Amino acid sequence: MIIKLKQRLISVLCLLEAYSGSCMCLTRRLFSKEGRINIRDFFNQMQRGSYQSETSKCRLRLARFCTGYGVDLGFGGDPITSQAIRVDSPMPYANTGTASVQLGGDATRLHWFRDGVLDYVYSSHLLEDFEDTKAVLREWVRVLKPGGNLVLFCPDEQVYRQHCKATGQVYNENHKHPDFSLEKAKALLSEIGGVKFIHETPLVDIYSWDLVAQKIV
Image 1: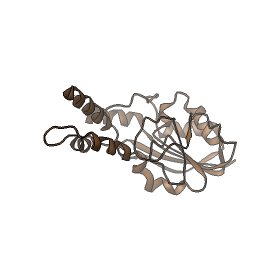
Image 2: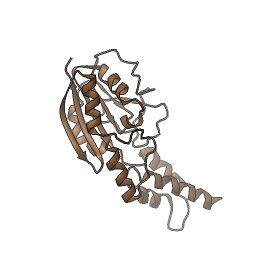
Image 3: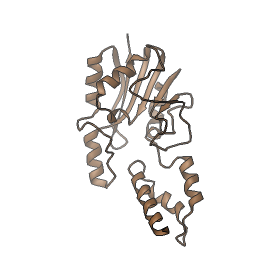
Image 4: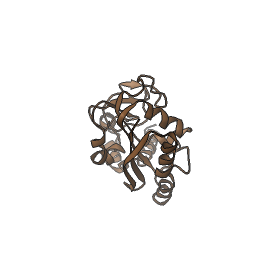
């Protein structure tokens, strides 16, 4: 029974490697030198956040675009700033920090907000999970004030797939589009209209990109 439990927990920890490479660190904390399971240590680590958030990689670059009143969509426990309104599923699948969900629901329908009321909408590694990317972007732009920022940090799908293949990192099956990229996001936002691009980084943090689109009307 204990051996099976250890094997299951090791499998879970190895899946976390897809996000941060912290699998070995967690494994060392989970098992003692004698091979006994340190359950208390394991759950304490889970409460603190079990792996590095994607947001932690881009915070120094992108937090300056997230001032005033805004939201972090799909924050997974680690919001872009402490002031961001934290929006996620009622039971988020990401566990990267201790911050709790403030608004639980669907990031494709921001029904809590009227048109043109937020200073920023920030989202990290979430947009690629939706079938209708354009509709989601339109909804996120809708709630921005003129002058407000849509701040995106997302993977380049082809680079990400190559990285997973080369390193053995577990591929995220939630990704919906093989052609998901910075250029695709920019093209869709241009079709929606009413925004200008004020910051972008084509490839950063191995397989990701940054984009900030400012609402102009």
